[in-house]
Image (cartoon, rainbow, N blue to C red; front, side):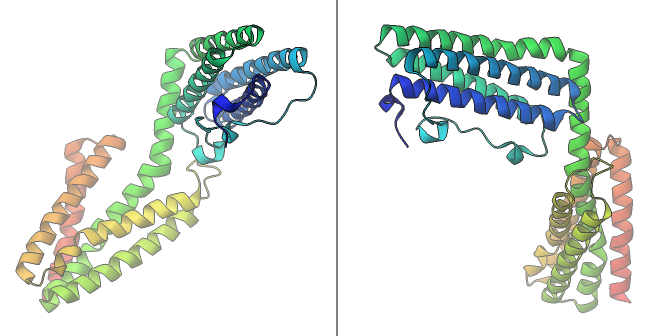
Length: 318
Protein backbone atom coordinates (compact mmCIF):
# COMPACT_ATOMS: atom_id res chain seq x y z
CA UNK A 1 0.00 0.00 0.00
CA UNK A 2 1.09 3.59 -0.65
CA UNK A 3 0.69 6.63 1.52
CA UNK A 4 -1.81 9.15 0.29
CA UNK A 5 0.78 11.95 0.19
CA UNK A 6 2.84 9.90 -2.28
CA UNK A 7 0.13 10.04 -4.95
CA UNK A 8 0.38 12.46 -7.84
CA UNK A 9 -2.55 14.65 -8.85
CA UNK A 10 -3.15 12.28 -11.76
CA UNK A 11 -3.30 9.28 -9.41
CA UNK A 12 -5.54 11.14 -6.97
CA UNK A 13 -8.02 11.84 -9.73
CA UNK A 14 -7.83 8.23 -10.92
CA UNK A 15 -8.51 7.14 -7.32
CA UNK A 16 -11.55 9.42 -7.22
CA UNK A 17 -12.92 7.87 -10.41
CA UNK A 18 -12.56 4.30 -9.15
CA UNK A 19 -14.04 5.25 -5.77
CA UNK A 20 -17.10 6.87 -7.33
CA UNK A 21 -17.65 3.81 -9.52
CA UNK A 22 -17.36 1.45 -6.54
CA UNK A 23 -19.70 3.56 -4.38
CA UNK A 24 -22.28 3.66 -7.16
CA UNK A 25 -22.25 -0.11 -7.49
CA UNK A 26 -22.56 -0.54 -3.71
CA UNK A 27 -25.60 1.75 -3.65
CA UNK A 28 -27.12 -0.23 -6.53
CA UNK A 29 -26.54 -3.46 -4.57
CA UNK A 30 -28.18 -1.88 -1.52
CA UNK A 31 -31.19 -0.96 -3.65
CA UNK A 32 -31.48 -4.46 -5.08
CA UNK A 33 -31.18 -6.10 -1.67
CA UNK A 34 -33.78 -3.84 -0.05
CA UNK A 35 -36.32 -3.72 -2.86
CA UNK A 36 -38.46 -6.67 -1.79
CA UNK A 37 -38.93 -5.63 1.85
CA UNK A 38 -38.22 -1.87 1.83
CA UNK A 39 -39.14 -0.38 -1.57
CA UNK A 40 -38.99 3.25 -0.41
CA UNK A 41 -35.43 2.89 0.88
CA UNK A 42 -34.51 0.97 -2.29
CA UNK A 43 -35.60 3.98 -4.37
CA UNK A 44 -33.33 6.23 -2.32
CA UNK A 45 -30.28 4.10 -3.00
CA UNK A 46 -31.16 3.83 -6.70
CA UNK A 47 -31.12 7.63 -6.93
CA UNK A 48 -27.88 7.82 -4.95
CA UNK A 49 -26.29 5.33 -7.35
CA UNK A 50 -27.36 7.58 -10.23
CA UNK A 51 -25.76 10.58 -8.49
CA UNK A 52 -22.50 8.66 -8.13
CA UNK A 53 -22.65 7.89 -11.84
CA UNK A 54 -22.97 11.60 -12.62
CA UNK A 55 -19.96 12.39 -10.42
CA UNK A 56 -17.94 9.68 -12.13
CA UNK A 57 -18.75 11.07 -15.58
CA UNK A 58 -17.79 14.55 -14.42
CA UNK A 59 -14.49 13.24 -13.06
CA UNK A 60 -13.72 11.37 -16.28
CA UNK A 61 -14.38 14.47 -18.39
CA UNK A 62 -12.08 16.52 -16.18
CA UNK A 63 -9.43 13.80 -16.22
CA UNK A 64 -9.45 13.63 -20.02
CA UNK A 65 -9.08 17.38 -20.24
CA UNK A 66 -6.09 17.35 -17.89
CA UNK A 67 -4.30 14.04 -18.44
CA UNK A 68 -5.62 12.31 -21.55
CA UNK A 69 -7.43 9.06 -22.21
CA UNK A 70 -5.59 6.46 -20.10
CA UNK A 71 -6.78 6.22 -16.50
CA UNK A 72 -4.48 4.18 -14.23
CA UNK A 73 -6.07 1.75 -11.79
CA UNK A 74 -5.76 3.20 -8.29
CA UNK A 75 -8.15 1.83 -5.65
CA UNK A 76 -8.90 2.67 -2.04
CA UNK A 77 -7.48 -0.64 -0.84
CA UNK A 78 -4.14 0.36 -2.43
CA UNK A 79 -3.82 3.53 -0.32
CA UNK A 80 -3.33 3.76 3.44
CA UNK A 81 -5.90 5.56 5.54
CA UNK A 82 -9.07 4.64 3.71
CA UNK A 83 -11.96 2.75 5.26
CA UNK A 84 -12.65 -0.08 2.84
CA UNK A 85 -16.44 -0.50 2.50
CA UNK A 86 -17.75 -3.91 3.49
CA UNK A 87 -18.96 -6.14 0.69
CA UNK A 88 -22.74 -6.23 0.54
CA UNK A 89 -22.78 -9.98 1.22
CA UNK A 90 -21.08 -9.27 4.57
CA UNK A 91 -24.12 -7.22 5.60
CA UNK A 92 -26.67 -9.90 4.69
CA UNK A 93 -29.41 -10.08 5.68
CA UNK A 94 -29.62 -6.34 4.97
CA UNK A 95 -30.84 -4.31 7.94
CA UNK A 96 -32.04 -0.75 7.40
CA UNK A 97 -29.95 0.74 10.19
CA UNK A 98 -26.79 -1.03 9.00
CA UNK A 99 -27.30 0.02 5.38
CA UNK A 100 -28.08 3.64 6.24
CA UNK A 101 -25.06 3.76 8.53
CA UNK A 102 -22.79 2.33 5.82
CA UNK A 103 -24.04 4.91 3.31
CA UNK A 104 -23.41 7.76 5.74
CA UNK A 105 -19.87 6.53 6.39
CA UNK A 106 -19.17 6.31 2.65
CA UNK A 107 -20.29 9.90 2.05
CA UNK A 108 -18.23 11.27 4.94
CA UNK A 109 -15.19 9.36 3.70
CA UNK A 110 -15.55 10.78 0.17
CA UNK A 111 -15.88 14.35 1.44
CA UNK A 112 -12.80 13.93 3.67
CA UNK A 113 -10.81 12.50 0.78
CA UNK A 114 -11.47 15.44 -1.51
CA UNK A 115 -10.82 18.05 1.17
CA UNK A 116 -7.49 16.41 2.03
CA UNK A 117 -6.52 16.12 -1.63
CA UNK A 118 -7.35 19.77 -2.29
CA UNK A 119 -5.36 20.87 0.76
CA UNK A 120 -2.13 19.19 -0.36
CA UNK A 121 -2.23 20.18 -4.02
CA UNK A 122 0.34 22.80 -5.11
CA UNK A 123 -0.86 23.23 -8.69
CA UNK A 124 -3.43 26.01 -8.88
CA UNK A 125 -5.62 24.37 -11.53
CA UNK A 126 -5.51 20.98 -9.83
CA UNK A 127 -6.25 22.58 -6.47
CA UNK A 128 -9.31 24.27 -7.97
CA UNK A 129 -10.42 20.99 -9.52
CA UNK A 130 -10.11 19.10 -6.23
CA UNK A 131 -11.79 21.93 -4.36
CA UNK A 132 -14.74 21.74 -6.73
CA UNK A 133 -14.91 18.00 -6.17
CA UNK A 134 -14.82 18.49 -2.40
CA UNK A 135 -17.76 20.89 -2.65
CA UNK A 136 -19.60 18.40 -4.84
CA UNK A 137 -19.14 15.66 -2.24
CA UNK A 138 -20.23 17.95 0.59
CA UNK A 139 -23.35 18.64 -1.45
CA UNK A 140 -23.72 14.92 -2.01
CA UNK A 141 -23.78 14.39 1.78
CA UNK A 142 -26.96 16.48 1.82
CA UNK A 143 -28.40 14.70 -1.21
CA UNK A 144 -28.87 11.58 0.92
CA UNK A 145 -30.77 13.62 3.49
CA UNK A 146 -32.88 15.25 0.77
CA UNK A 147 -33.68 11.93 -0.86
CA UNK A 148 -34.57 10.52 2.54
CA UNK A 149 -36.97 13.39 3.17
CA UNK A 150 -38.54 13.18 -0.30
CA UNK A 151 -38.85 9.42 -0.61
CA UNK A 152 -39.05 8.29 2.99
CA UNK A 153 -41.49 10.43 5.00
CA UNK A 154 -41.93 9.70 8.69
CA UNK A 155 -44.90 7.38 8.25
CA UNK A 156 -43.10 5.29 5.60
CA UNK A 157 -39.90 5.20 7.63
CA UNK A 158 -41.86 4.09 10.70
CA UNK A 159 -43.46 1.31 8.65
CA UNK A 160 -40.08 0.15 7.33
CA UNK A 161 -38.51 0.30 10.78
CA UNK A 162 -41.37 -1.81 12.13
CA UNK A 163 -40.92 -4.24 9.24
CA UNK A 164 -37.21 -4.41 10.05
CA UNK A 165 -38.05 -5.19 13.67
CA UNK A 166 -40.39 -8.00 12.60
CA UNK A 167 -37.71 -9.45 10.32
CA UNK A 168 -35.17 -9.31 13.17
CA UNK A 169 -37.59 -11.12 15.47
CA UNK A 170 -38.38 -13.78 12.86
CA UNK A 171 -34.76 -14.43 11.87
CA UNK A 172 -32.94 -14.15 15.18
CA UNK A 173 -35.12 -13.73 18.27
CA UNK A 174 -37.68 -16.42 17.51
CA UNK A 175 -35.24 -19.29 16.83
CA UNK A 176 -33.07 -18.18 19.75
CA UNK A 177 -36.04 -18.03 22.10
CA UNK A 178 -37.32 -21.43 20.95
CA UNK A 179 -33.90 -22.91 21.63
CA UNK A 180 -33.50 -21.22 25.00
CA UNK A 181 -36.95 -22.37 26.13
CA UNK A 182 -36.33 -25.94 25.01
CA UNK A 183 -32.87 -26.09 26.54
CA UNK A 184 -33.89 -24.47 29.81
CA UNK A 185 -37.17 -26.32 30.31
CA UNK A 186 -36.92 -29.70 28.60
CA UNK A 187 -33.59 -30.60 30.21
CA UNK A 188 -34.89 -29.91 33.71
CA UNK A 189 -36.50 -33.35 33.96
CA UNK A 190 -33.45 -35.47 33.03
CA UNK A 191 -31.01 -33.34 35.05
CA UNK A 192 -32.98 -33.32 38.27
CA UNK A 193 -34.21 -36.88 37.79
CA UNK A 194 -30.60 -38.03 37.60
CA UNK A 195 -29.65 -35.82 40.52
CA UNK A 196 -32.32 -37.12 42.89
CA UNK A 197 -32.04 -40.70 41.67
CA UNK A 198 -28.30 -40.94 42.28
CA UNK A 199 -27.62 -38.21 44.83
CA UNK A 200 -24.33 -37.73 42.99
CA UNK A 201 -23.31 -34.39 41.47
CA UNK A 202 -21.05 -35.88 38.82
CA UNK A 203 -23.72 -38.24 37.49
CA UNK A 204 -26.19 -35.36 37.30
CA UNK A 205 -23.58 -33.28 35.45
CA UNK A 206 -22.96 -36.01 32.85
CA UNK A 207 -26.66 -36.49 32.22
CA UNK A 208 -27.20 -32.74 31.96
CA UNK A 209 -24.35 -32.28 29.46
CA UNK A 210 -25.58 -35.17 27.32
CA UNK A 211 -29.15 -33.85 27.37
CA UNK A 212 -28.06 -30.26 26.60
CA UNK A 213 -25.74 -31.08 23.70
CA UNK A 214 -28.10 -33.68 22.29
CA UNK A 215 -31.05 -31.29 22.48
CA UNK A 216 -28.95 -28.54 20.87
CA UNK A 217 -28.07 -30.73 17.91
CA UNK A 218 -31.65 -31.96 17.55
CA UNK A 219 -33.22 -28.49 17.79
CA UNK A 220 -30.64 -27.00 15.42
CA UNK A 221 -31.40 -29.51 12.69
CA UNK A 222 -35.15 -29.31 13.32
CA UNK A 223 -35.14 -25.52 12.95
CA UNK A 224 -32.95 -25.54 9.85
CA UNK A 225 -34.92 -28.27 8.09
CA UNK A 226 -38.38 -26.99 9.00
CA UNK A 227 -38.31 -23.87 6.82
CA UNK A 228 -35.94 -22.70 4.07
CA UNK A 229 -37.16 -19.13 4.45
CA UNK A 230 -38.22 -18.69 0.84
CA UNK A 231 -41.90 -18.16 1.65
CA UNK A 232 -41.86 -16.99 5.25
CA UNK A 233 -38.97 -14.50 4.95
CA UNK A 234 -37.29 -16.02 8.02
CA UNK A 235 -33.84 -15.91 6.42
CA UNK A 236 -31.13 -18.49 5.85
CA UNK A 237 -32.04 -21.83 7.47
CA UNK A 238 -28.49 -22.60 8.58
CA UNK A 239 -28.28 -19.31 10.49
CA UNK A 240 -31.57 -19.97 12.26
CA UNK A 241 -30.53 -23.56 12.96
CA UNK A 242 -27.20 -22.47 14.42
CA UNK A 243 -28.86 -19.85 16.63
CA UNK A 244 -31.49 -22.30 17.84
CA UNK A 245 -28.97 -25.08 18.48
CA UNK A 246 -26.52 -22.90 20.39
CA UNK A 247 -29.23 -21.33 22.56
CA UNK A 248 -30.72 -24.77 23.30
CA UNK A 249 -27.34 -26.03 24.47
CA UNK A 250 -26.69 -22.93 26.57
CA UNK A 251 -30.14 -23.18 28.15
CA UNK A 252 -29.45 -26.72 29.32
CA UNK A 253 -25.83 -26.20 30.35
CA UNK A 254 -26.79 -23.27 32.58
CA UNK A 255 -28.37 -25.41 35.30
CA UNK A 256 -26.03 -28.33 34.60
CA UNK A 257 -22.76 -26.56 35.46
CA UNK A 258 -23.60 -26.20 39.20
CA UNK A 259 -23.29 -29.97 39.47
CA UNK A 260 -19.56 -29.62 39.03
CA UNK A 261 -19.68 -28.73 42.73
CA UNK A 262 -19.04 -31.98 44.65
CA UNK A 263 -21.47 -31.14 47.47
CA UNK A 264 -24.83 -32.37 46.18
CA UNK A 265 -27.02 -30.08 48.33
CA UNK A 266 -25.08 -26.92 47.41
CA UNK A 267 -25.05 -27.85 43.72
CA UNK A 268 -28.81 -28.48 43.70
CA UNK A 269 -29.63 -25.17 45.42
CA UNK A 270 -27.43 -23.29 42.92
CA UNK A 271 -28.98 -25.18 39.99
CA UNK A 272 -32.47 -24.18 41.14
CA UNK A 273 -31.39 -20.53 41.34
CA UNK A 274 -29.98 -20.75 37.82
CA UNK A 275 -33.27 -22.21 36.60
CA UNK A 276 -35.16 -19.27 38.11
CA UNK A 277 -32.78 -16.86 36.36
CA UNK A 278 -33.26 -18.68 33.03
CA UNK A 279 -37.04 -18.54 33.33
CA UNK A 280 -36.83 -14.83 34.15
CA UNK A 281 -34.72 -14.18 31.03
CA UNK A 282 -37.17 -16.13 28.86
CA UNK A 283 -40.10 -14.16 30.29
CA UNK A 284 -38.27 -10.86 29.64
CA UNK A 285 -37.53 -11.80 26.01
CA UNK A 286 -41.17 -12.79 25.42
CA UNK A 287 -42.29 -9.46 26.89
CA UNK A 288 -39.67 -7.40 25.01
CA UNK A 289 -39.92 -8.94 21.55
CA UNK A 290 -43.11 -11.00 21.44
CA UNK A 291 -45.43 -8.33 22.90
CA UNK A 292 -46.52 -10.74 25.65
CA UNK A 293 -47.76 -9.01 28.83
CA UNK A 294 -45.05 -9.44 31.51
CA UNK A 295 -47.32 -11.15 34.05
CA UNK A 296 -48.71 -13.51 31.43
CA UNK A 297 -45.21 -14.30 30.12
CA UNK A 298 -43.93 -15.06 33.63
CA UNK A 299 -46.91 -17.26 34.49
CA UNK A 300 -46.75 -19.25 31.25
CA UNK A 301 -43.02 -19.87 31.43
CA UNK A 302 -43.11 -20.48 35.17
CA UNK A 303 -45.93 -23.02 34.86
CA UNK A 304 -44.06 -24.99 32.21
CA UNK A 305 -40.88 -24.91 34.26
CA UNK A 306 -42.60 -26.05 37.45
CA UNK A 307 -44.32 -28.96 35.68
CA UNK A 308 -41.11 -30.23 34.11
CA UNK A 309 -39.14 -29.65 37.32
CA UNK A 310 -41.72 -31.61 39.34
CA UNK A 311 -41.65 -34.39 36.77
CA UNK A 312 -37.90 -34.72 37.15
CA UNK A 313 -38.07 -34.83 40.95
CA UNK A 314 -40.92 -37.36 41.00
CA UNK A 315 -39.17 -39.69 38.57
CA UNK A 316 -35.87 -39.27 40.35
CA UNK A 317 -37.38 -40.20 43.72
CA UNK A 318 -39.45 -43.09 42.40
